[in-house]
Structures are given as structure tokens and as C-alpha cells.
Image (cartoon, rainbow over all chains, first blue to last red; front, side, top):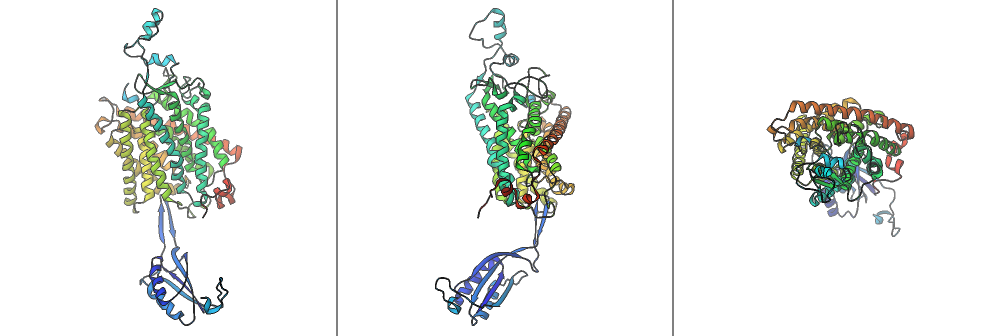
Length: 112
Length: 464
């Protein structure tokens, strides 16, 4: 099993979700996050006070999938989240040691 | 009565014969009760004052409108500008000091400001509203027309309440709640009540008339009494208190400009009561103040945003809200002392000056007047009060007489502004020092870091 973490631009969420659904992905977790990379932050000005925020808002998607479809999932996210500009995000893939479905107690691939 | 002197309230009660005698005009009505010959001759010149129901209804409405400026208007305007962790403390401070001011006002504030003839700096009399009944009346600007004294007392009470609450703008996010309450008591007593008396009290003789009123200073609705007074006091407070931890290092962005916009709207609406209500009657003068309170504010909104654009920033919502307040502050002394186009000019000029000060000068001063109580109310009040000498000009559509002497009036306005600055500066320094001795001024460092909501009040503004 693989655990896929994708950091994407917030407005690409629907595209990514639709693309993953058509792949048969049954679920994912989405978190609002902030971070920095090569994309520059924003300058905010409130009367005389100027603040440069280096942290840019992004969404973090977490998806647990079987080994077989993991490469396809990565490809799909990459295509759906891509806008061809700095700040489009990153995709990380980790090995997933175990998974348990809380309701039934099923473990492994069947729990996904 | 000359429009020039439409600047303040002449207070009397039916029991005070001094006033009725002073206001005597054409012998049109004789008293019902015949007296001995000599007194009949004197009384024949008296006018039986009328309490007009329209005036009374309007003044009750105006009083309630000013209340909406305080809670929730000013509370939300200021609250939106602080960080989430201090939102509730600002709301609490505003409602608490305003409430304190109301209680003090009926105990001795009204007595010190408008209670009766004493000298040019203070009134004495009517403490605990002694002798005031539902039948007591206060004079308006039209001879023969009066309003119930309780209405006048309540209207003026809201002015005291909002002025002390305005000072909070220089003190947020670091001052102890207890210190603020002590400060408010001392400050109202030695700063607000005397200045209100000096600007608005007309006594029987020049020696008992308020100093600035006697000079002929124009202040329709409180440019000196409310705005210069609060702005200077906030500046002094910001200096004595010191900067917030992390000032000009940490991000201290407003937590909700949505709240600030709601507050701005409520302040603008309430300000119609404040300015048009200061006519004390439902008449043309109130109408003039009404239109001026619309257009000067609108000019303030636009010219603040244009100034932002001109100095290389984007036009912002906070700029629009700040410009609205600058315009409102500027038109306060000029409300009934200006034509609509004079008011537009005044609002525009004030917004440009305040914007440049707040955006360019203040960051270099290193004084943490956190919400720009000085930059907008103090400076705007000064520009508005001095500018009122200009807006009076008939050439600008102002209500000044044909022979209106602008130069002379300008000198009087500048002198009045000077008195207000010095009085408020010295008085507020004393008031803050007393508070420091009694309670200490600042919260502990960890309270300031955690936020005053939890540290001072044991609550959060938002639980989600």
C-alpha cells in the first residue's frame, strides 16, 4: 500500500477530485495548509503597517491506495493540478505499513 | 440669534428665571397671573417657551442614534482592527467605559459641564440631577423653543460616553481593564466635563460662559470636545503605555475587516444623530448637518482611497473605512457651519492629510497609537475645527453672514484647538498617571502574548 500526499493549489481541488473519482478512488482527506516554496508571498498593507506573508495557502490531500494503482493516481493528480506555473505543488509517495477500517476492523487493502 | 453662535447649548430650566429674562424678546404675550405693576412690566417682555413635540421626538431619536455609534458601532470598528485574541477585550472595554461614563454623567458630569453658572471652565449645580424633573426644559437655538431637559441630558451623555470610548483606540491589546476604568473616571472628570463646558455652555454673563464659547469658537457637534480631546488623549496614552510587544515586527493585521466595515456603517448612521442632533431641533440647521454628514464622509472615503493609489498602493477597504471616519470627524465641527460643497472640500482635505500621516509619518514616529485614534480623530479634529472657519464662508456656500470675517474666525478656531490640545494633553497625562498608581497600566507579558480576552476576561471572542 502507498500513502500519497499532494500539496496543490486550492482552486484545483475539484479537478483533482473528479479525476480521482473516475479512477475509482473511494476517499481522501483534505486539509487547508500554508507553506512556502519557490512561489513568492503576498504583501499586505493595513494603513501604515506592511506585512509580507511568505506563507502561501495550499491544500494538502492525503490518499491511501493499493500498490497497483499508486503510479496512476500520481499521474492523475499531476495532470489535474497542473497550471504550468510556479506554486502548483508537490506529490509525495510513502510506503504504508498498515490500514484498518474502524467500523469493521478489516485490515490491509480491503480497508482502503 | 446669529447663526455664528449656533455652536452649543444654552441650558436652563423653567425654574431659572435668569434665562427667560435673558431670552426675552418682543412683548407678544403676558403671563397669565397678574402681579404687582413693576413685575408685570418686566414679565410682559417674557416669552412662554414652547416644548415642540417634533423637536423632542427628533432629539430622542438622535440620542439613540449616538448610542448605536458606541455599541455596537465603535466596538465593532475597533474590534475588527485588532487580532483575534484581543477582540473580546476591545468589545468589553468599549461597552464598559461607555456605561461608566453614563453613570458618572448623571451623578456629577452634567453638573460640571452644564449644571449652572460658575466660571468659564466649569459649571456647578444639578449634581445627581437635583431639581430636574420631566417638566424641566433646556434651551435650543431658537428663542421660545425648548426641549425637555432629560432629553438634553441624555443626548449630551452619549457624547461623553463615546468620547471616552474613542480613547481606547490608542490603548488596545495591552492595557489592563481595571486601569482603563480608573483612567475613565479621572479623565472624564478633569478633561471631558471642563472642555464640554468651555465649548458649549452659555451662561448668563461672559464670566460664566464657557471660555471657548465666549471667544466665539465654532464647534457644531464636537470637533474639539470629542475628537481632538479623544485623539490627543489616545496619543498621550499610547506614549505612556508604550508599544505592544512585537510592534513593527510581528504581523498585527486586523482580524476582521468585515466587522470594521459593519462598525463603520453603524458609526456613519449614528453620526446623523450626533451631527444633525446637535442642532437640538428638527429644522433646517439639522437638515444642513444631515446632508453635510453624507457628503463630507463620501468625500473622505474616496479621497483616502485616491491618496493610497497616489502613493503607490491599492485602494483598500480599510482605507475606505478610515476615510469615512476622517470625513465624519472633519465635518463634526462644521456640520451646521458649512454648505454641502464646503463639507466635501473639508472631508477630502482631511482624508488626504490623515491618510498621509497614518501611512507615511506614523510608522517613523515609533508611537504605537494602535488604531490611529490620534491619526484620524485627533488630526482630523484639528483640520476640521480649523477648516470650519473656511467652510463658514458664504462664497463656499457656508452660512456665514455677508460680513463674515474669516481671518478673525480662523484665529479663534486655532486658539480653541490649542486650548483643547493642551488641556487634553495635560489632563490625560494626569489621568493615566493616576491609573498607573492605582492599578498599574499594562497587563503581564504572558497575558499580552496569550491575548487579553483570556487573560483579562476569561473568555474568547470566538469558539470554533
